[in-house]
Amino acid sequence: MYGLTPFEKRTYDLFDAFHDFEDNFFNASAVSGCKTDIKDEGEKYVLEAEMPGFEKEDIKLDLDGDRLIISAEHSASNEEKDDNGKYIRRERSFGSYSRSFDVSTVDIDNIAAEYKNGVLTLDLPKKQAAVPAARRLEIK
Image 1 (cartoon, rainbow, N blue to C red):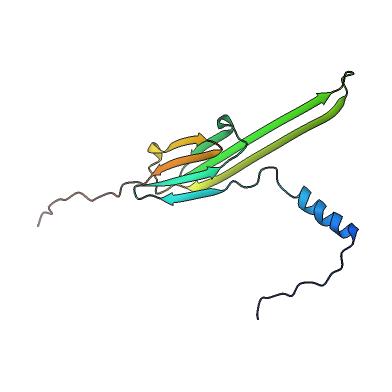
Image 2 (image 1 turned 30 degrees about the horizontal axis):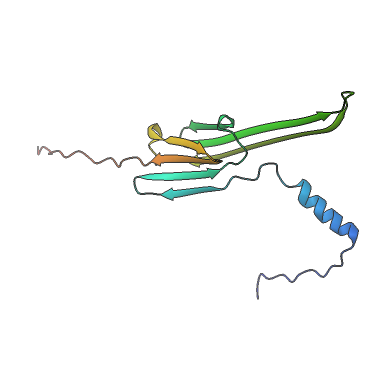
């Protein structure tokens, strides 16, 4: 059985359990990577990216050569003050996301995008294969 490592025998105490919780809690990102599905529908690709919590205005689609870059940035704050203007609770959150895709086989002039219910959908039409023109060759 190559490649199998037996579980480490370890005794846990309350201190270890707290550190495991702390590591998992503070290492979680504000915006986990958005889940992306790409389907080949014959004449086009359809890309669906889950982007919950973002508004349409937060999302940017950029083309750089043969790369499509999807990026989004979101920030929010919530403040509650008492009668004296002192904070009782103040929360802020910030999240950003960026991902790029190779679009060298896509007709970039005809890409269509829609954002609805937290899902970004892109229709990426495929480039038409260049058919060589028929011609007659001259014999010398």
